[in-house]
Amino acid sequence: MSKKFFISLGAGHHQKPLIQAAKNLGFSVIGVDVNMEAVGLPLCDLVIQESILNYRKIYYKLLRLPVEGEFIGGFAASYGKALLSWAYLAERLSLPALSRTQTELLLNKALVRESLHKVDKKPDSFFQPKFMSPQSIISKQDVEDLGFPLILKGKQGTSKEQVFQLENYTELKIFLKKRNLSQKKLSPSNILLEEKIIGDEITVTGLVDNFQYQLLLITDKIIAAQPPFIELEHRYPSRYEHLKEEIIEIHQWIVDTFQIPLGPLVSEFKVVNDKLFFIELAPQIPGEYIGSFMIPAAIGYDFFTNLVLLFTGQDIQKPSQPKKKKKVRVQYWPQKVPIDSWEDWRLKANFARILNPNPSVPPKSNRDRFGVMGFIE
Image (tube, rainbow, N blue to C red; front, side):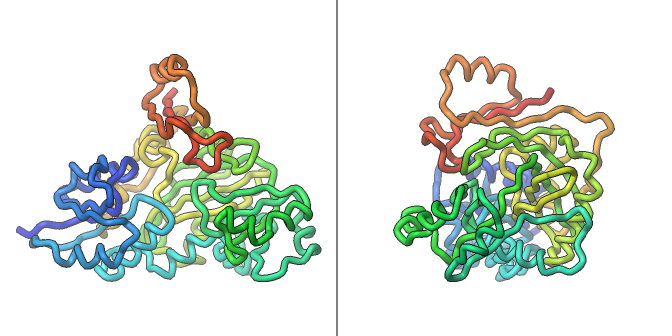
């Protein structure tokens, strides 16, 4: 009997739950990682040592594996360019996935904003901040129409990298100088300017199955007051559970607009007087331990098992919301804390992990956070 192989682009800490889920479903797993000490590799049946961004080399090596069987599915439990790598491989191997064109579009914050803005009929509860994606000279009047302070970010930034707040036009002119942009690894063509919306933040996690959106979890997000607005806490249940139907309607509209056939969908919104202001979305697994900890703890849903089912062409379990909601939260420590304080908190937590023993101060992105803990109350 020939084996069925599931491909995991990446085999690190955040990819391990996907690998384990595929193994539990009876698939043989091919793990791809440049780091031969990645924690998920011991679970894999076959290993390819390669950067997950080198999709052509990975494709070449996959075709030359000395085994009998078929590639049944796979995914990149990562973000950004890794998702583009997977889109390329899935197309070449005829596996269920978003196309490269769809993936490129959904990873570009400016293109997503512009595409949604152009749709004539929008859900009544859907709003966007005013925005502009300058291609050449930025006029003072156009920027002042956005209002200050404004947010400047990279079109394809992740993990709160390349997120800045500018207080006035003078600051903006200084920021946009060629030397400054070069130092911050930004190009004029890779900038999105948007109105700063003052309001609460929520993260919405769902799955798309055969063009149908399935809501999994709405969580409140607590962020730092200063840019790059790193994420400090995620809480369930959300104070905005009463907007569930509007949130589902918006996401189904997004799925229809972009013709998304399948996959995870994570989005962020600001909420002002029950109006939902769209900030961004990504066709990726949720970070911040939402998929591996919060979703199973809050609603009893095995996110990664269903993700494997989805990407191997099988029926997934429909999510259901419990009548009695547990309080679940993920809390981050942005700066290093004394070991005795860490240990005191760790004893109360359901999990704890030190992420960066020596984080930068002030933080430059979400990667500059000391540690994380999860709590079920």
